[in-house]
Amino acid sequence: MKQIIDHIVSTRNLTLEQLAGLMATEDQEVVGYLFHQSHQLAQRIYGNKIFIRGLIEISNHCKNDCLYCGIRRSRTDVHRYRLSKEDILQCCQQGYSLGFRTFVLQGGEDGWFTDERMCDIVAAIRQQFPDCAITLSLGERSRESYQRLFDAGANRYLLRHETADPKHYSRLHPDDMSYDNRMHCLHDLKEIGYQVGCGFMVGSPFQTVENLFQDLQFIRSFQPQMVGIGPFIPASGTPFADRPSGTVDATLRLLALIRLLHPQVLLPATTALGTLHPQGRELGILAGANVIMPNLSPAAQRADYSIYDNKLSTGSEAAETVNDTRYRLGKLGVEVPADRGDYPG
Ligand code: 5AD
Image (cartoon, rainbow, N blue to C red; front, side):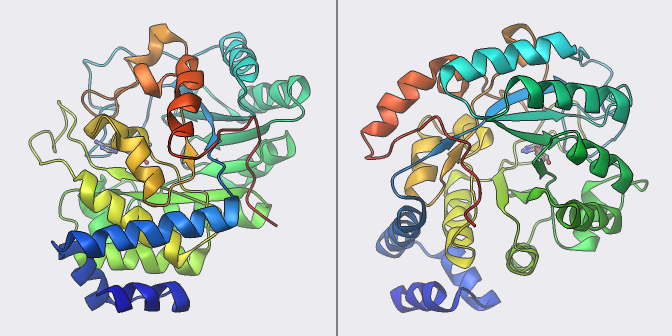
């Protein structure tokens, strides 16, 4: 099976059968080889640098009712909040002094954040922090809205495609959401000039290895600048509350494969991975991830952004402890610079 990995490295492609074999193998030498090749490739492209993004969760109001999500509209027991412009700028200020040069404004699809309000916030960050990248992760909006936010100073946009199989998509989402619109948004974002991130959950309900193959092929054809993946983790009060979590192991294998198929991608070791395993982030980096996204939200709101149960927002997931993270990752031989960490070229 090591030859298969070498073949994936040289062709940047794989077959469904090869994927199925690599996801199922219990040969730890093969898995170790996969992680090693992937980590080496990341280092060849990015040196020993791991980039940090400060994640600011601006609102947990959401008009959508995604079946997997802990802040879905129909959860009435969630304490809803939204941050003010001043709150957000204060988070950025704190992040800047900790060495963050990318701010990720993430939130549910909250109608309160109209284009006018959002552009005002983006423009203020752009003005106060001219050397920083602004990443938005606010779900599906119109092309015109994406354009206005870009013109106001946003550089990047994260919108996970969730699954590249339309039938699977419809089993994870209510009828008023569509795979086609999600794809439409992703293409609009790219055309406007954003650095775009797509991604999916590992082990989401009904997911098959064929679906994962479709996800990888989608990544190969779409060529996103970023890919976010993490294990599915059940959220109480949702239709999938009793489903099993995805695994750390499957997530690590897929991180490694994404790196091999799309070498330059900016690939975070996500909070969901850190939530399922105390060394999740370190393991992710050793499997080819090169980004971490500590939580920079005001401490009082962190617990309310509970897209799944037991979501970590303290300890090593907290932006305040980024200097401990620098020290701990230093022991893996990687450094965490105060850098925007743009996609190369
Ligand atoms: N488990 C893991 N990831 C989740 N997300 C939403 N709900 C869950 C869950 N229960 C992911 C989705 C979404 C991103 C913000 O978080 O992929 O796009």
